[in-house]
Amino acid sequence: MTKVLVVDDSAVDRRLAGGLLQKRGFTPIYANNGRQALALMEEDPPDIVVTDMQMPEMDGLTLVDAIRRTHPMIPVLLMTAHGSEDVAMKALRRGAVSYVPKRKLAKELAATVATVLEMTRVNRFPQRFIDCSTESENGVQSRFVLDNDVQSINALLGYLEANLIRKKLWDETGLMQIQVALREALVNAIFHGNLELSSDLKDQGETRFHEIAEQRRVQQPYRDRRVRIEARETNTEATYIIGDDGPGFDPGALPDPTDAANLEKASGRGLFLIRAFMDEVHHNARGNEITMVKRCEPASEGARESGP
Image (tube, rainbow, N blue to C red):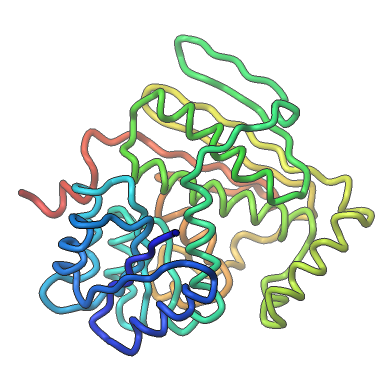
């Protein structure tokens, strides 16, 4: 039984979210503000928390800070509404691991919860994907090659997370955020890079999107394309370079991922999360390679901003 704590001061929104999760096989439990949510978590910790941002007594941002301090292994997913973009951006930087706009709950909530939970499970990474790996006093450098099967992504994330755990540079929340950023970059490389699928296809439904993806995986020129990953982990930072064999795109044409107003936009969601969680992000000129850098912090941002 996978328990999802749904936190929202609106009874209608709570039940809507809970019903969507229940259809997917999750067990929802409910709280109408952050204070009540923390009390429930002390009695019976859930597997994941899904929270609104604007609530009385204790809002979503304060709740994210508190969960990072008291339950760092439990991921937090935001439900964002128009007008809450700025506070949602702060929450992502301070400990939340992903978000779903309220107007897209029916389409995306259950799937996003499932994806986040999958990433918390460390999987054994098949050795056939490792191109090379070296370790020295300066850190670990590894290269990997993936085909266009998204099922291999979580295994790679588990392998990379194990390297980061040994470094002890980030807390559990920081590790989850790195995983989310990596997953978004890898999914983009497979679907939008190698398979050349447009985000607009999702307007026809997730089923249609994935049907075309499966067709292209066995068609030329898509089937021979690969995703290449270079990972460098030192005692001060982690750098990831992810490239695909697709035609690339113009990075300048994307919505500004640093603008909180773009939380509600369909395109650029992955890059928005990547920029929220990584300290440095840039693409190559062709647009088929992304470099991401995450630097260690002496203390979490939430602890610095919220104070004692």
